Amino acid sequence: MWGCSVWQPHDYLLQKGCDLMEKKMKKKKTPVSNKPLSVRLYTYRWFYVMFLPVLAFLIVFHYLPLAGIRYMFYSYTSAFNIKWVGLDNFIDLVSRPPFWNSFINTLELSIIKLLLNTFMAVIISLLLNEMVNIYFKKITQTIIYLPHFMSWVVTASVFTLILSTYSSGLVNTMLKTMGIIEAGEEISFLTSTEWWRFTYYLINIWKDTGWGTIVFLATLSGISPDLYEAAQIDGANRWDRMRWITFPSLANTIITVLILNLAKIMNLFESVFVLTNDIVTEVSQVLQTYTYDITFTSAPDYGFSTAVGFFRSMVGCLLVIICNFASKKVRGRGIV
Amino acid sequence: MYFLLCGISIAAALIPFTVYLDKERYKVFSVINVILFLLICAFIIVPLWKVFVDSLDAQAGYGLRMWPKQFSTVGYQVILSTETMRKPFLISVLTTVCGTLLGLIISTLGAYVLIQFEMPGRNFLANLLLFTMIFQAGMIPTYLVMVNLHLTNTLWVVILLPAINVYNLVLMRNFFEGIPKSLFESASIDGCTPMGTFVKIVLPLSKAALASIGLMFAVSYWNDYTNYKLYITDTGLHNFQMKLRALFFSSDMPEASDGANAETLKNAAIMVAILPFMIVYPFLQKYFVKGVNVGAVKE
Image (cartoon, rainbow over all chains, first blue to last red; front, side, top):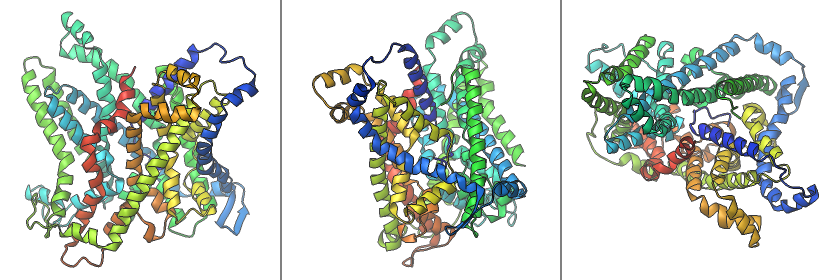
């Protein structure tokens, strides 16, 4: 799950489910049962058996790795060479410029990406909501959801071809035909430090904006038409209706989406990993790719890598807690 | 430079609204709106169309060509006939099928237990699940556990690891909560065991949920790249995504590529990687979207 940085509207659903359950729990304040615990345990015995496989998966894939976090205090170069080094890994960590660089990059890339994607998704869903022709609307939706189902490898491959500087690259050839650039000064979108980030944001918009509109479209279609009708009778023009009905209804959803996604900005990995290359490391290196690089491309010190990972998890955890707090302040309910 | 471009595109996105707000020009707005969406669709479709065309063109390679110059299916033939390309495809199919089934089993079992609100320890189990969403061990400790369990370089790791997905599990639980409580009660009065209720009542009633969450699992298994990259170094066990990546960045061309242009082959490989979902997607779109829509509209 730590590899998943694509922002997924179904988190929003998750949220709704949690709220619903909270409400239900609050309503049900009466004691659930007055039978003794042993009887209740016996009644539910089969449910415990049914939970066993889930528990086994949880322990093996989530809780055993948690125990491995202790290696951040060790020097671990191979299974036979594990030495206690105390906080040395962390002292080493803070003195490394590439580490800080990748930390800043993680924040910058994921926050700008999040803001751009959300902004575009809101605009597109507002416009799509105004679409009169229902068939055209359906077809448009089908098309803009499409790229979400492609893997990042496929996306990277498609854009490597399209943005190529050779004559096979669609974009550069088009720019040359239109006379915007001369032959010989083709833009290397993915292999130059000035252009890489722009390309990265653009590819993200291409891939995920459409999918992001689902939540906003659902909110928009959930606004009661009576409100608009009543406003119209009271003499509200288009702008007034948008200002006082559409925006307030959307604001809550926008804040929810932003908060839920802010909580996992540290997870950025695969999208960067498949689009990066040695030339643009300076602008593209994020914490996860940094961890990957120091572990799998040179002589590994798993202890040091674990320390980097722990730092990332801690920042991520802190963000979740802050977002949870913000979410409670803004919406009166938490995110997890 | 690119901040300028961003600014221009944002301003362009706002233009329709200036017309929209003007009562007189609302007709103009609808026309502009349609044109804008045609452009947006073009923005999404053109890269894919280009790949599609080049995969069917024996002389692929020129940027502006939007129709095959010399139509041929040689790219696809090479992929289907070369052992080193066919095997990754079959591995992708195998892991997707097994993984989706396993993922569904885990999610439905977990979700079914989580809706037993009166079960002692239910909250503890729920918190055990939720905690993994807040704090994750990270890449390296997970890697070390997989190494110690001797799961690396086997297909087990890529099938088992993504099967426990807490997001999907909680999503499934939300669907299950929609089932009326009285059904469970009447089932237990009629002498149905918990497992019986699960198989005979819960699962048949949540076919839509199974379809929608099953599709989420299938997509994530089919598209899996990170887990292969981390845990599997044996190229014989790589899936199609890994193969595609190798084709592009290590120029790992199949030997039998005589007659097929390298560009044609790359494009055909991309098409093969997306084709299974392109084919089912238009028919199953409602299930893909359902997971999001049902919950978001419900207030």
